[in-house]
Amino acid sequence: MPELPEVEIVKQSLLKNINNKIIINVKINNPNLRFKIPNNFRQILMGSRIIKIKRFSKFLILELNNNYTLIIHLGMSGTIHIIKKGKKNIFTNLSFYKSPNLPKTHNHVHIFFKNTKIIYNDPRRFGFFKIFSNNESLKKYFKKYGPEPFDKKFNSSYIKSKLNKKIKNIRNYLLDQNFVSGIGNIYANEILFFCKINPSLQSGKLTNKNISHLITFSKKVLNEAIKKGGSSIRNFSDTSGNIGSFQDSFMVYQRQNLRCLRKNCSGIIKKKILTNRSYFYCNNCQKK
DNA sequence: AAGAGGCCCTGATAGC
DNA sequence: TGCTATCAGGGCCTCT
Image 1 (cartoon, rainbow, N blue to C red):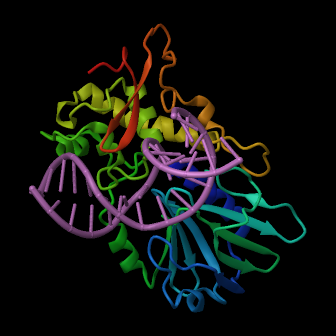
Image 2 (cartoon, rainbow, N blue to C red; image 1 turned 90 degrees about the vertical axis):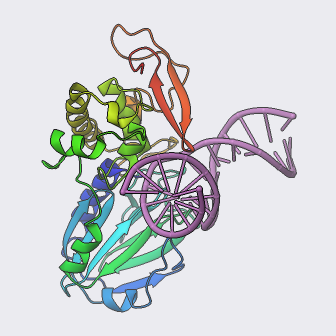
């Protein structure tokens, strides 16, 4: 599920609850995530203190006081639960599945602190954990990723140089983390709506105006989503903890056959498929 | 080199 | 009710 805004929300919650805390125990129920959790994972974490919690793109970055850095990617269905002694479960993530309560299955990794524990749950196991022994190796790992939309480097000359003469559609470019980091299918669609760009447009055909809109609205849409606590599609019946509401602001995502919400536009939202993934657009204001 | 497609995996939902 | 097919917010790898 999680795109940049959702991961940001999780980060903020971790910051509040486990920053500067010492890991006193680690339990791995199932190491077989997207990548197998390394054998020395437990040994490295045990006894270390979390001294910094950051986010880049869709990655959570936890710096430890033993020079190691842990990164967590939530994949499609990863969620992190914070359990505090004697208190109600804090649900840090926006659930792909039903309940904000701790699910009975797929609780793969438990990390214990004094009076607090966090549990990584991930039904599809597309998420992963990685450990880096120093800053250099971490930097190297992130090197291939493009800038976030908030980054100054995501400017018109960068975009022009990357998209020049490219025939690949712009929706797929927004999903391409090597071009721009942090955008997934929901926000790609939402951003393109505000830009009035058809998602299937060949990227090389973007006008200067299109590009400047892309820069403006990618920031705007993501910021707005963060403000609203991210998106949780599949509604929960119950809410405790931080549940996002940006899904109520979707202009196109999963709004196929409904009226376009742009002022004075009489278009209808259409759903189509590009490289096996749905995209949504207004057949009037996002004409090619 | 760029782009398309397959694949990893489980669960919810739609349709019969 | 119970089966099957389809789809899901990600990203890596392979093939052309």
